[in-house]
Amino acid sequence: MTHHLTTRAVRIGQFPDMSDAYCEPIGMTSAYVFASAADAASKFSGAKKGNVYSRFSNPTVRSFEKRIASMQGAEDGVAFSSGMAAIVGIAHAWLSAGKNLVVSRDVFGTTLTAFCNYFRKLGADVRVVNLTCLNEWRAAINENTAFVFLESPSNSLQNVGDIAAIAQIAHALGALVVVDNTLLTPIHQNPLEHGADLVVHSAGKYIDGQGRCVAGVVVGSECLMHELRGVLRALGSTLGAMDAWLLHKSLELLELRVNAISQKTLQLAHWIRTQPEVGRVFYTGLNDHDQHALICRQQTGYGGVLSFEVGCSRESAWAMIDSLQLISIATNIGDTRSMITHPASTTHGKLSPDERLFVGITDRLVRLSVGLENEADLMSDIHLGLTSISSMHAEREGESVAT
Ligand SMILES: Cc1ncc(COP(=O)(O)O)c(C=O)c1O
Image 1 (cartoon, protein in one colour):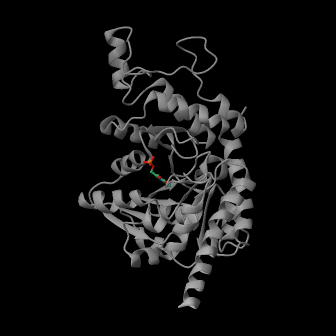
Image 2 (cartoon, protein in one colour; image 1 turned 135 degrees about the horizontal axis):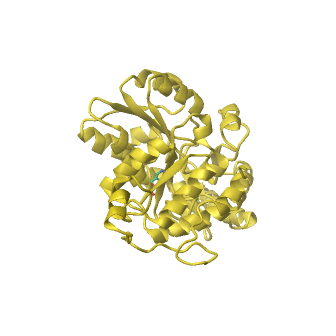
Image 3 (cartoon, helix red, strand yellow; image 1 turned 90 degrees about the horizontal axis):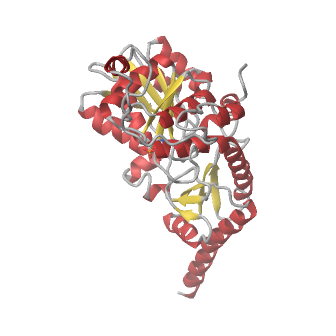
């Protein structure tokens, strides 16, 4: 009998050995004992299943991998020490001489840096396209494409990539489709159902949900995961048992957390857009989002990341951020505590002003990662921030009248 995602989130991946403890034990061990030399040989060769060495096999890490894979209806998963280790692991697994990769422009900045700076240096042909323009994907993907990589919705501007349409183009030419699902989690989007082959998460975001660890995980078919585990074995970017245990337990409350966060974010988005000093608001939950029909087909929720423009300059955005008393100034996302950042001077600070304008990151933009605080308290705090901009403008006008 197949259980619902919520049931799988708390039941899959339990391992009973070590003791009869109700809560899964933490496998804090690097090595394992073999029954005999023959037992060791058969486990090392892969002929017999069993743990060999914790760089690539650990019972607690395995529990986490099985649980997250099951929650997405995937056959298997491979955990890594960070989201970037997982992404770089994918590139190592499938890129080879003469192959190219096609990536959407508005993925997480370091993903683009890894592909464009480091894999290009190794000779890879990296093609960067506009997430929402299928013609650009069509023109870039060819029979030499190893994989395509996208993040949807994008962070900070909440553009949405049509996973099914991109997968159709990629699969016709034999390329794999990789989707970074960090923002929406398995609860609000399952890219595998839309044709993706691999789904990657920066697991220290919503999956942990409390900012306690850095981790990454990839899910997909057993055959693809077998190849990826080979890369993990060689690269050694291993997730530790303690972090795996935190993540394994965190999955049990993931649905409750992200549903609550998504509801609060939608409420805030509606309220924020009615406020003075606020310009455009970017959130896939808003019915007038340009890609509403696609969002309804592809997402089952909207997540907790919301961006909006304030005032008329960088100074107004900074004044707003600096006036907040509750929301933390931090560049992370996916925490129980709300966080705000100014993308133009942090996450996108390395881009030139022209490049930022090209990708749509204006100086007035702020990005909010909504947590679990009471929504009225969050509104009061944001109101405080927006009032500081109005006061700043009033002071300026006063000064110019006086002079
Ligand atoms: C969407 C997304 N993907 C990947 C990463 C990289 O993950 P990590 O920081 O775990 O290496 C991040 C990090 O912020 C992210 O936001």
